[in-house]
Amino acid sequence: MVKSLLYTGPALDDLHEQYAKKGRIDERAAVRARCDVAIDAPVGTVWDVLATPAAWSRIDPAIRDVRLSGALAPDTSFSWVNGKATIRSRFAVVRREEELTWTGVSFGARAVHRHVLRPRAGGGTELEVSESMAGPLLGLFFGAARLRAALASWTDGIRRAAEAVRHP
Image 1 (cartoon, rainbow, N blue to C red):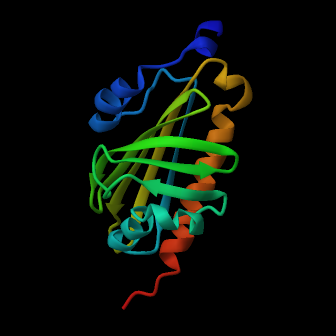
Image 2 (image 1 turned 90 degrees about the vertical axis):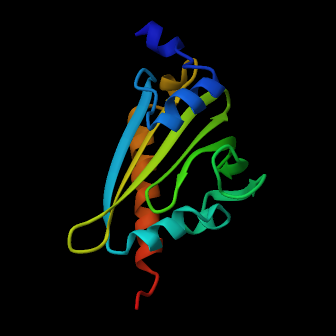
């Protein structure tokens, strides 16, 4: 128990290169969650919602001040504010209509946040979101249940935004 509370995870560069870019979260992190949602919108529409960071506030109104250092591409850094937390992030995987993954750090916690999109039989999109967060004592004030609730809210926001787009 104490060992997991003190676990800080890999260095941020290792987390980025050896985990996020290889389609993995940190399974040893004390805080991990996954959420799946079926979205009644084409994969391209879901991608457009997710791959437009400047408009993430329509997914979650607590998100603001998203600033990218360049184009949406692997290794592009960006910063953003989610509630009271300022997060410094970097895209790890950017595969149009398939996966968007980034790493980030805030208040000393290191995270991997993955989004995997799959077309559903009969139409629509299956979105799988998973995240790991590691940092000393993180589990005491931000546990897996809280992360699961945040991911459920995030995926529901993506679903609502994508389904609100009119399709021909």
